[in-house]
Amino acid sequence: MNLKNSLQQLVVIIFIASTISGMSYTLFRYKFPGVPRSLRQWSYGMMAPYQTYRTHNEQLTAQGKRPDGTWEIINMDAYLPFLRGERAMRSYLLTFRAQGDIILNQKYTEFAGHIKRLESDRGREWESIKLTIQIWPMSPAGYEYLRHDPFIESEFLVQIP
Amino acid sequence: MSQQLNFWDNFWVRPVPPHALALTRIALGLFLLVYSALYIPHLSMIFSREGLVMPLYIDRYPALSLILSAPSPLAAHIIYALFMLCMVGITLGAFFRLSTFGTLLGGLYIWQLQLHGFATSYNRILLFCLLILLFSGAHRTFSFDQKRRSGSWTDWEPISILPQRLIALQITATFLGVSLQKWWLPHWKGGEVLSYSYISRWGTPLAQWYARLPLTLLHYGIVVWTVKIIQPLCAIGIWIPRVRIPSIIFLSAFLILVGVMLSIWWFIFIIPAFILFYKPEEVLLRCRSYFGDLIPEKSVKHTK
Image (cartoon, each protein chain N blue to C red):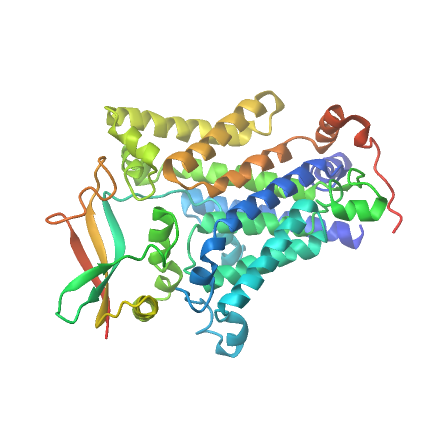
């Protein structure tokens, strides 16, 4: 058996082990012994379906404070140029969320700083920037159909300064 | 024992014509070009330090800040142009290994720059496919590299079937995993998941229109159960010649509907890879039946 063949057989064995491990974790949450966690998680990640759903809408919202103390919603379409679902998923900052609440809070603060700078670049100065998650009921009439009082709830994230 | 070994080697590592993998390579290259082109109008915003960029690893590896931090808008455009040039290389089979490596590297670099963490299944499957293609020999026909080696784009050299098997089996595992898991996931017991998804942030205008039709929850439940039953059967059926075409049609329709109704369109890159479930020898014969002697019956011995 030459080196190339040996390498190919090794790849086959690693692939089979990681796929069986990923599949057993996907279907039964059983962690197959002897297979490294990274391999199992990688394989599981390729089999993870659309696992859950929400019965409400929610969206990261930035608000700017005017000198007169009123708050206005900032249009972030130009800053997050993605499809609606993708934009929402990205604005959860999932990779930072996985690092814990302290890091997540730091990163949302950083996010708010970016929004302040980008708004300033466009000639819109705000005294403060506040990030919240807006939550409102779903409706077959449209995504934003019920996005108004009295249906909206807001979950505070961060505010600068 | 020897017979079993023969079957094992025949399935995993026998030398085969490269046409199925080459067609997959071309389709993947074109898909990547289209997908990447959609970001071109927003490069400064999503990949440069003048936009909304939060690099993932810069806090962990400050010594590598030169590499991991966001570039200037000009540098972002240059990097992205090189990144897309690599995709052109994949499509044309030009400097294929370098192009695939560049696409992998560029993809990871760009991913860590922006608001990452999206579409991890997609990212993982794509990364897996690119890694496999890197060492696959998918440029051994229908490629600029092959033209350089032997003088014709359509000359071909045999490659190991291993890359083809790995991608095909991963597609099977993905469809099996996503469908069988729905049998016990609490949110997939009935049709609610689908009805709510159609009016969620993922729902397209078509899905919203569909959700307004006077359909009961039973209707959505039937759709969900149809997917739960037929999808795993198709994941297996795609290996069986007699039911391969219906399986491909169902799985393709599923991926297209996920794109059309839920705006998650990027998984369509899997559809061309269904050709990998056919025997490579059959794909060569089919190519010859379309293009005749333009496709040589026998492989060439390269001269360089």
